[in-house]
Amino acid sequence: MRELFERLLVSATPASRVLLAVWASTPFFVIVLLAHGWALTSDEVRAGLNAGPMWALQALLLACVALNLTLAWRLWPRRGRRERVPRSAMLVCLSIGVGYTALTILSGTFTTCASVILVGVLAIGLLIFPMSTMFVAYLVCTGLIVGHDVGVLLGLWAYAPALGPQAFVSDQPTWWLTAWREYVFYAGYVVLLD
Image (cartoon, rainbow, N blue to C red):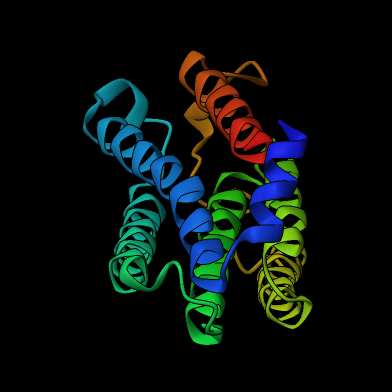
């Protein structure tokens, strides 16, 4: 698998690298959108969520998916060309990075394993995209996380804005939060293996 991945990267054009990132991340975002949509309609689960941040995350993830699919649609005809696509590469890196970062922040940076997946996604980005592109994405994602942490320390907002107190019973996550955390971990792990 590793040899196949290395061979693909060596022969990949700039456009096909963007397409690889789109195809690796978009299914994850779509499944999260669907799962969160279900959660927001389930009385049991919705009781443990803060609807405002959840709807904001839904809007952001929908925008990320729309941007990724638009980039894929534009780049598909040019996938075999060697021409550089710096704007598309930057947009897809920011879309994926900001989407994962928002998911990480809203669910609690250290409560879920989303932060581990975010680090892995950034590392894979270094294999696919130029260092300068990933540096910008890294700065944006790190800035969001640090800004959130500072706000939490100053008492400006909640640590895990999307989660309410009913997400835990006797300091243990509910069944649905446990299932969500495991999905994020294993789905993210699969993305990292691709």
